Image 1 (cartoon, rainbow over the protein chains, first blue to last red):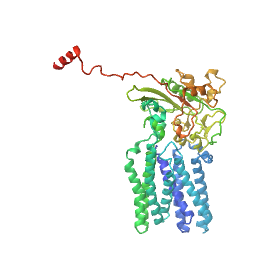
Image 2: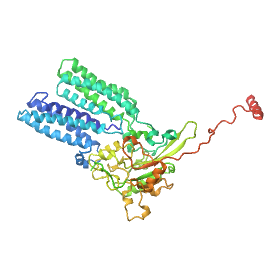
Image 3: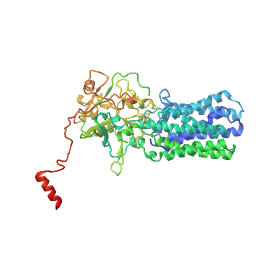
Image 4: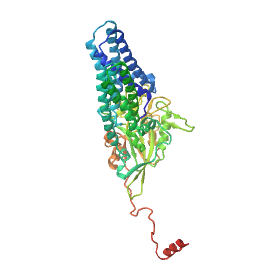
Length: 289
Length: 243
């Protein structure tokens, strides 16, 4: 699949932002006043920035408001609704906690659950696609959730919790690749796709078009597969293993947390690029790819 | 709106005969022509006369070769366009309600006044049937020529999709696949029409008719006539070797 920068930035930073909101709603870290303002500011900057970035890949932005209308059937629509509701609710919670010193325990918990639902809906946009068997597996939402709450815990300054979550993320990343490889290998042959397998071995004689087209550009993107193994190691090392090791094995401090965060963000961006770039769409079979 | 109708009154669709299709791309051209001048945004081209031309098409013909060991290969031309699936994933993923399936005849259409061009419907389609128009920024797909088939301004014989009307080999058929007594349904039953990638659960309405079985000569093609020539040819072989 074509790794659109806007979507990579959206899923990475929105995930971190909503992950941080999920912790803040549960009162973690237990701070108030200016410090809490700074935490909410970072969460909103990431979540809103990511959401705005996601609109950059829309070819027809003027109809964007309609995207909130189909929440009964569409995960993308649900994602939009959940994100806006979560951000509005946390706006009120943040104001009450920062300026009125209110506890907001119950509404905070509701907000946190909504933030987690938002992350889940993001993951389901990709998980639902039967055409991309690498994504269409139960571990995809787990992967997105661990990225978000692990990175969120790191931003919230909860070094040890973040360390444990990122260690779990490392395991899930590895399992997701194993499962994904098995599923991708099973997606069939040109004979299956054309229904001509009974005639013998089927190969492409002539493509339907000599120029490029939207389907090839968008769904038969193959650059990522060449260096997939190396990029996986980079994503796993920087995104999960190294930050988890730093957080769990060194005494908690601002410097170590910052290094862990920087590594995690870079690793996540690499991993998210690969998530799209290496994913095989079943339509590639019709092109013999 | 992006909920699929529980059932449609008709299941209008195409039956494509892979035995008869000669791969002339006439249907591709007729489709592009009609749909550029009629329903919705025109099908644009980019760099049409330059070094790297590309464009939006709703129907494209691929040619495949099938070969069994020891037999000559067989060429099959396969036109591919929207299959107007009963369980169309492109409809339910749409966040705006732009992508919809009509209750009256089962045609899957895009309302371009609601489409945001996010491309998720194209991602959800296993058949590569949807292309985003780079000029208009909206998703384009086969409309089954909805502006022809009910158009009383056209002579009756023209009230079929442009691809069907133009096909010179009679490889494309149009009709109601929900009615077991329709011509197309009988054709599918007679010839063993099949679905593309049925395991993905899309329940396509369009059907493909498999190529009819071919005779096979029992001699393998292009055997060397004589490995060790005898008689005059043997003498000639040796004599030429010695030269």
